[in-house]
Length: 329
Ligand code: PCA
Image (cartoon, rainbow, N blue to C red; front, side):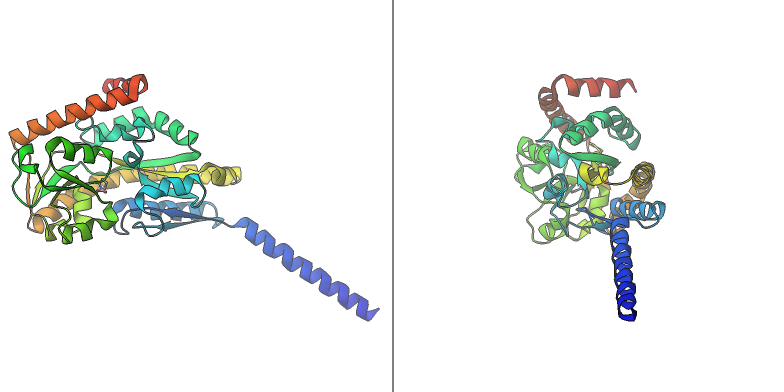
């Protein structure tokens, strides 16, 4: 009798522990979120805040771990990793995937949207189409935030497109590669995480990117001039594998969506506010920062016109409809 009851007690206790363990395992969901940009960059700062907001709103039931600086996946591989569920969520530069769908390149059409305000309008006009295109690929859009306006860096004075001829030109997407071809520079694709090394070893002599990436990569250690052409504001999009999102209970889904909406608002404000400091840092570190000369401006306008025409041809009526809607805003 004694033996039997002690056996039963132990049996019940073990069952209780198992139940408890599986309840805990069930209650906490863990997502990894790879990003290709450095820890100190405001995109990552914003991602960390997003993860903290989700943690709080779900009482720690959904833990998102941000892996910055391409430490988990290289920039061009993040989207596929999320599509295939190797990562539950991720952040990518949308235009890296322009080859999959022209709408992913709408924010890198030169001189279409050149300020934060215009860029936000273009996002409002294109968001639904971008979200639908991502949805078809098995990922759910959470939010998008911009990079500062794109200018030209070099290690000599650049007064016209002809001055870019022959330079080793760093590209980060299809559009920046095309620009190199048009101006007769030598394109080499390098993602942001490898940019400091490419600059230090002389693999890169000129490029177009933002003041933010200039500061992130201490660009003044290799290059001397920055021309503030304000050509376009590319965006990062943050998304989640659809299956991973659908596996959350409705309250958690709502928490993620609300934190994402807050991150989008915060990210746009953060980008604009930080840009002033980034521009100042370039000057403070000894770079010559200037607006483009009239010749460089008109040369870049011509490059922009070529790229715009090519994009419209690829994107067809859907693309034109977005641009028409944007222009009316
Ligand atoms: N920085 C990123 C993308 C655009 C930008 O401003 C980069 O240079 O890779």
